[in-house]
Every structure is written in C-alpha cells, then in structure tokens.
Length: 583
Image (cartoon, rainbow, N blue to C red; front, side, top):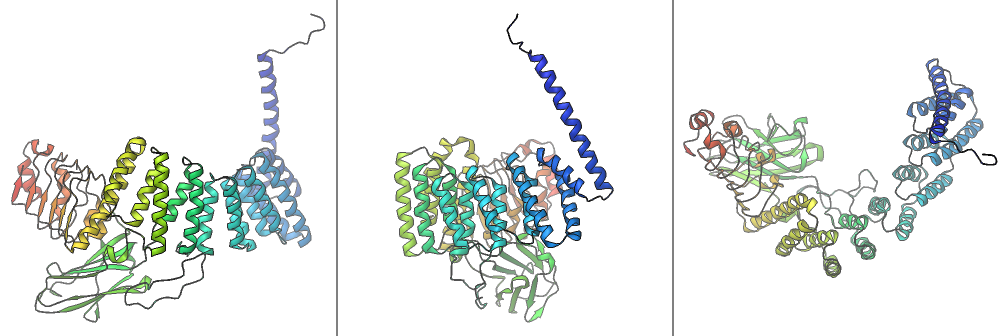
C-alpha cells in the first residue's frame, strides 16, 4: 500500500547478512594469503606491516601474524636509526591499545605489548603502569593485565611498597578480588620478610640471609605484619562471609612456612646391611647428590627409591657390600652427605646393636603446626573467637567452618581434636559435593595427630584404627615404625608411599575396602599381614607381597579371593615364605 515502509522478511535479512559476511571473508582471506606469501618470500616491508595491522585489528588472536609482525619490526630495527625505531614502536603501542579494546584478554596482544616495551629504545613505564590501572579498573581480574603489570614493575624498578599500596586501593574498593589478594601474597615476603634464619642443618654453621627476590624467597612474612594482615582480611570476610577470595588469602596467612631442606633421618640395619635416608622433601638421589662415608671411608653404593614409581622420593635406601657391618661385635660410624645442599647427618651403630638411627622428630621440627610466639598465639586465639562469633551468625558457612579448623590446627592440633572432627562432620553435611575432599583433609589431620602422639610416647607403633580414614599421607614420617594398625577405616589401597615403612614388621588393615597392595613392596622386615574383610579379589592382587622375603603370616578371611578355585595352591606358589595362611 502507498505510504507504508516495506519491511524486509527474516529470510531476506539473513541472506543480506550472509552476503555481507562472505564479502568480508573474501577480503580477510585475500589479505591473510598475501601475508603468508610475503612471509614465505621473506618480505619485511611497510605493506606487510599494514596488512598484518588490518587483519589483527579485527582478529587480535592470530598468533602467526603477531610472529610475522615481530619479524618485520626486528628487520626495521636494522635499517632505521634510533629515533625512527622509537616512533615505530610508539605507533605499535597505540595500535595495540586498539587491539585490546577489541579483546581486553587477548593473549597475543598482551604478549606483543610486552615484547615491544622491552625493545623500545626509551620506554615510558609510567604510561604502561597507567594503562594497567585503566584496564584493571574495568576488569580487576584480567590476569593478562596483571602479568603485564608485573613485567612493567620489574623492568622499571617500581618500589614494592608502592605496589602493596596499589593492592590496598583495589582491595579497599572490592574485597572480592582474587588477583589483588594473590599479588599481595607475593609482595609481603619481599617488603616484610621474616628476619631470623635457622641453620640449614644441625651441626652446620648458619648461613647469612640473602637479599629477598621473588624466585628464591621462602615466602615467610614477619610476625608483626602478619598480625596486621589478620585484621585486614577479617574486615573482608565479615563484610561478605560467602566471598571466597578473602578466605583463601586467610588460609595463606595461616599456612605453615615451607619446610627447611634437610636430612631428617638416617637409619642403618646390621641384619639387612642397609642404610635408609629420609629427607624433608622428595629428592632425586640417583643423580649422585648423596655420599655415604663409613668409618671414614667413602662407600661405592647404589641409591634407589623405595618404589619404582618414584624418581623423586623423600626416602632413599642403599645396600652395603656383604659383611661390611654384619659383625655385631664391631662399632661403626656413618655419615650421609647431601652434597647438593651442603648438609650431612651422622649415625653411630654401637657394639651389640642390630640397628641404629639419628633423626629429628616431627615435634622437634614443628611439622604439623606453626611455631607461635606468645603474641601471635594471643592474636590467633582472638581470631578464633571472632570467627566462632561469625559462625554463630552463619552456622552453615563452609568457609567459616574450614577456617575455624585451620585456626585450631595452628593453635593446638591435639587439644582441639574433638572439635575439629565435629566441624568436619558439619562441613560434609553443608557442602556434600566436596565431602570426599573433607574426608581426605580430615584423614591428613588425624594422621598428623597420631604421629605427634606416637612421638610424645616414644614408641614405634602407629595405631589409627576406626577413624574413617580415606587416604594415607606423611608416610615418610613412619620410616622407623615396626607395627601399624589401620583397621576399620575406609581405605581402598595401600599406596606406593607405603614402601617407605622400611622397618615395618606387622600390618593390621582389617575391615577396610582395600583392593590394591601396591605399596607393600620390598619391605625387608615384614612378617605378618592381616587383611580380613577387605576387597582382595584375585591372587594377582597379592603379587606385591611376594617381594617381602620374611612374610610368614597372611590373614585373608572375608575377602572375595577366598572363593577363588585353587586359591590355596596358587598362593602357596606365589608366596612360598608364608607358613600361616588364613582363608
């Protein structure tokens, strides 16, 4: 009808859009092919620079074109003077800002900007910091920008204090800022490092502390600053108890410092003529970093980890030549040198003794809790009281519950054991999706407590039955244990780390769900294994036991394997040393 605007149908609109896209695509493909052709012919001219700019303006994530563009710019550096190069790179930075407007999280654009800034004859780092400020004001979690900012700060020697104040401003405007909290955790050890350094190894002279740097610093923060940080982060999670970022930072503040690298134990057995060495962290001793000296003479021995799965292990063993220390009437002195760390530990095997060891205990090393001053203990008690008050207001807040557990662990793991278990049960109920994680974490804490109790009692028996354990950890701390009781838990396997129990004689692991014995591997003293009411299904599941030469007693009652035909004869062939087999 006259006077009415003709409205295009949806089909017409789609067809026009399709044609427009095809037209743009042809132009784009033609430009791309021209770039590829020029690069193939090693053409590094202004036209190539314009072509790549045209393409990258619409698609800044084309890595090949950024590479070609860097090749062109590198070539131009060789044919232009410094002032011209300065202008070229300043224009490049302006172009990159336009690319970042298209995609503020473009990997290629941020990487190229870092490359350009590093090659600029006269870089303007203040401008780059200002760019970072603008980008982070738009999106304070843009990790590309955070990475670039760290590079700019490093290149321009921005004071650490200035950057810490920058995190103050961002956190003050938005508590829910993971990146700012994390950046703060990297800056604090540099600006407020813990001053006192303990000697690296008992008997070794103390080392003077080296200047702090991000690559080598131990990440320990002085106590005075820690106390201030507790107040800051408490303000954050009281403002929004359900926000995760502040709680994660709080966990970092409560975390134990990195363990000192040291030889924690040396054990020697006269009967097996074997030496076992435990370290504070997994190491690779195959690379010749260990030297064994016996009675003043270096020994040619072959160090091996306790299980073939481990290239790095906290426990390493070696066998001495037959007859070296077997005579019980002789006394021997051993020294193990860790050449990589200039550390050593001595051990004496006295006349009439079949074994000997020298070690620092978990209680000596404060492995499972922080070493707290009176002031810090008082502050953490106050923190615990505050978080308990918050928990009364937010009884189902998982972050609050988990933090209470961590505070209790930091203050007195044994004294708060009952409360800790109750809080873990509540956590499993309010956050059922992560109940397995809480089960494993609770298992870890219960094992730590049991190790502490064992060492306070000065015994070599480790008993942790009926505690709902779902996993095993800290097994390197059990090198000297002779008897372990893991019965009535929820274990499904004895992992490869179990092979670290080199002194083990008796294993009780009844009433679990164990179906894998991988870690019961080459335990030289093992004599008895009780596995009643587990999930051992086939004789092949028991294959690791064949590596234990002294195994005499094996209890498999209540396992599916007992229903297998000819099981007794198969096990007799598989385990010839076993004389007492209970099926």
